[in-house]
Image 1 (cartoon, one colour):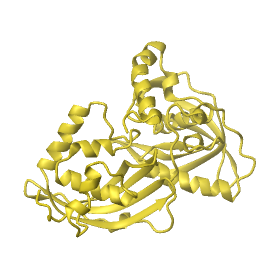
Image 2 (image 1 turned 90 degrees about the vertical axis):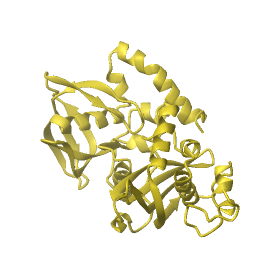
Image 3 (image 1 turned 180 degrees about the horizontal axis):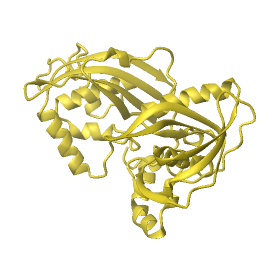
Image 4 (image 1 turned 90 degrees about the horizontal axis):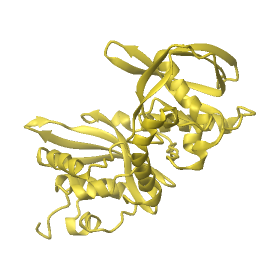
Length: 325
């Protein structure tokens, strides 16, 4: 590449003075710099850089590096990158968001998209954790106010194995935590999120109500459950695939009751009781397990657990020992 070529990240700087040092091993100073360098890596077909800057807890992370690299190369070679527009950048402590529009075409058709990317600083390195996508230029994805994301607790962290404490008072701190949990759940595109998953060992979880349709499951309004108690599970059970934000990239068939009764306190302080069924019951039971110190993998029979154990060991090494960093 000629020395004086402009950087593909659209900064207006020369590549050698912009993203090239990052592609060669210099650490980005912030998440925005990382986002630009990742975009430039897509343009220049540098899959190794994309892989090395992806958080090991990202849902996009793959243990099959060869296949991952091949799909990244296919995307780069099949796309024409016209322009990058940064719409918003927010950073707080070890978390950050960058909202951008990438003006791209594929096979002579417009493939422009907007992404709200999420980044986490791990071991002094900014890494890409995930993102929400929208077709075309979508400035409505920019949110006002401060960043309200929370860092996730991942497999192997003790907080996920503790019995959570009762909430004595629904005060402003609890209400603020609920808001931050909802934003974190939405950012991670999760069906639910329990307080222990964001390092708060209290009996609280939120869900996006699953609504079963002919085309599958859609996400409805947010529900908040404080000091819940689960009882009267049905004798009828069903096995369905489950995953967990705290155990990324791993899924398994989990058998659970079809129905159960939940008693809980609403965010407004009202004690309520409901009979839950279907997907809503499953999501609630999954999140309820979290405040009991139980993970979905504990619900598997021993033979299935044994099959998953090597993958869980590898995941824990990636997340906590920096093996993939």
